[in-house]
Length: 231
Image (cartoon, rainbow, N blue to C red; front, side, top):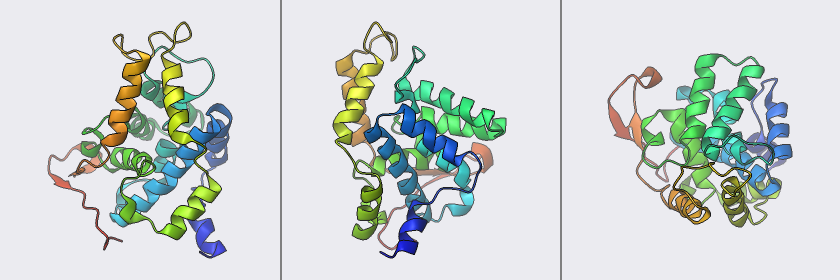
């Protein structure tokens, strides 16, 4: 892979808040989870291009939703809610503070809040679908979208660093009393949170139905098709 191709693969959108978003993630998430967040952004773009969805999703919103999707696992004071909701709220605060409009912020909030919910993001439009799919690709799904050279370049830039163990530990920490006793639903325990995460990580291969219509207004749904001959 040439230096030019590598740089294009790892590039970020040309928005004034991109560097602030990266700093937020890499200073408040563990390094392995932060690297996962960065990889999820790159993978989501690759799936977007593979499915010819470039004109159907705003790249800056996709960057925000994928990069910030696990910011609810940050290591500071947290609200007593699920990490997906806390992360969606934190991302919304960040984007609002940087002048992003309310309708766009709401789309990012939904994409982050639903990124571990199998069967729902696939029906909530391309941004929500791609946010979940980009994170899912980091668990070994949708590999037809990536070459060995691309994978090597991405993991060289953002190594895994025992990511699977680290993210489970961070999720369990979210619901460990007394710091955040009600972080998940009242019936959740560390074991049930662990099981919920593993169930989500196994469910990325569900066929993702396409939701047509602007702003989720349409009701026609056809499956997104991943194939080795895609763009």
